[in-house]
Image 1 (cartoon, helix red, strand yellow):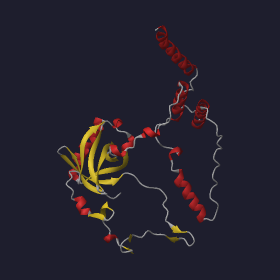
Image 2 (tube, helix red, strand yellow):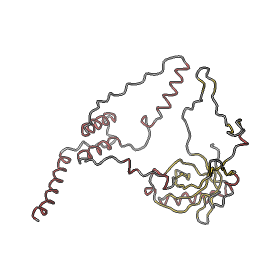
Image 3 (cartoon, one colour):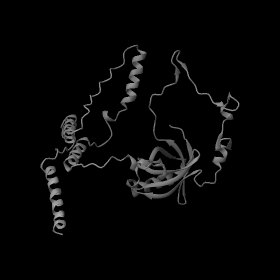
Image 4 (cartoon, helix red, strand yellow):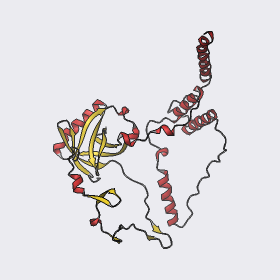
Length: 298
């Protein structure tokens, strides 16, 4: 059972639901130590006071806010806990919205909210069932780790999940990253849709959704322990340096996806567009010619 990382309550109008917060995810990554390569000794980080030039213990370390280069205001953990915030010990629900109206870029890590004892069982179940039936999610405010945060509450099976959310000013404007104006034909769009059809799945299971990087690292470590060569790295495909023919690439991708599926009939796969896609530009051209005639007569 994962340990509780925060305790408080969900505030839902005048309804209070005592809860514990536990992590909803697990880290299965392979972690490494920093070592001194000549003798493989551990390399550790030491905390040194710049003024006294000595290593300090954790009990001597606190927080400080730098106002100027030589002016630092000390702030204690107790002072942060005593801030006059209604969200200091509560996840305060402030609104309900449809999930599709939330930009996924604002949604961060997730946590399970566990009811705290028998007294919390009924209001917890009430909130969970109301969320499920409404097909909405709750937006809440809460304070963790020295800052107030925005959160999203949703239902997953029989549990309520809290997702941390980023504030609007934490999302960068992508305008400067968008590509220059280009034309994309209807044939190319239909080709991309056909490829999407071949790659559509019902659920995220199977070999394509495995952590192959962690598996490869584990296999490399095992090979080194057994004093044998690790598996050979496949050669990457050579780049031609030429512009890609989008339609040729889409056709080849659809054929490859259909081959991978085995054409066993488990999913409906649409053929690449032919006559319909070719007619689309002609209709557009005709529309443009019609629009120009009044200007010429004028």
